[in-house]
Image 1 (cartoon, rainbow, N blue to C red):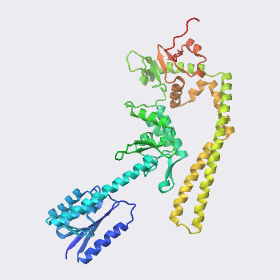
Image 2: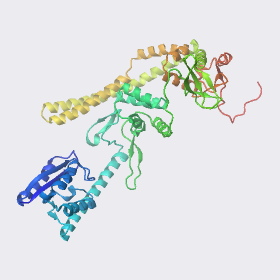
Image 3: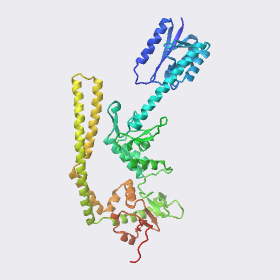
Image 4: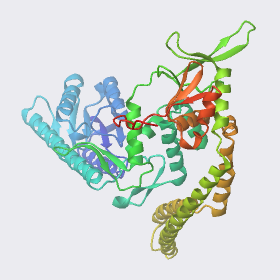
Length: 507
């Protein structure tokens, strides 16, 4: 009795196992009708024919190499189960026959492949070419459909949802919706990156806040992903252009912020910035030559370490950190805002908060109306479940979808519904701090100190000849500029806004 092995395969795990059952049925019928004994079966489930790197196909080749003398046939449902590349499949079946004397049988196509028989060779080649043509047409349709869905309809089709979003809906109605809790972390990541917070520090803070994506490049991928700016990346298709297209989902960051981040990421940053609490001004204060000052400890004769701010150019700044910090604290002390000015800020802020609260009330009303609609849909699904109008799988799928949507809307309502009295309380408590800027700076952590310096002086704080110098300072903090210069801690020389305008003569 002749002996045979068989190979079965289907491409997508989403397909029904009926594909394998059908192949088993056809090959079983062939074996029974031709009185052939089945030795073994090799099955690859959810494996593409684009490559031969398939677990059971590799086992099949090893089995043939070892037991080819006791096997006469290799059965397949169709020849394209080997590969949809005609050349690769023909080469493989020729190898099996010439090297191991095993004939390949395609049971549904009625082909017994025999390399020495012209008719058999032609028929096998024709079937494989037709299968490859079908694969090419199918690929074109799929890629065309994906292009339309992304470029024309603005749909996000990647299987894994981006951090910061939830997937809502089914089929063509499936879309991304902002997850308010995760979106807050995404915004923090973008904000810290633009504030020059080192990447290692951004990762540390993000993971502490609840960021759950793993890998060394997880933060980089968030920063580079256009989905957060309400865009979708599309590959070109035939004569149609690729690139970034507007998406239908709500952005988490604005396009300007995202573009700024992309420009910054393109710049090569060879130096790893490490936050050292002993030298918080490192990198934010510049030498008179424009180079940001570095900082490092130096060991004294007693063995004690002393910190210094230095310029990388020789014979430029080499300042004691103690002296630099004392001078800067004196600057902070003189930047403190008078009570009269704080009152003006308080009055203006009260008005702004009232307008913001009014606008938020309208947004909350809209969200509550949306919440009622989703709750009604959820109730309708539950009623259908109670009446046995839908099965359990359908109920669970829609219950999960609507429940997630309700949670998202509820979180948005909570975010937009702060206690108005608490807002004014926070304003009053923090506005008073403007009267003691030295205290504000001292109690801040290193990252906050760096951000404070960059914000107040617009990144233009220099050190030259034993004193700080700046052409820019926030107006609210410049009222004691002359006293700062008298005390030898800061010289403020205001930069002329338009150098093309010739100043008037006279007093």
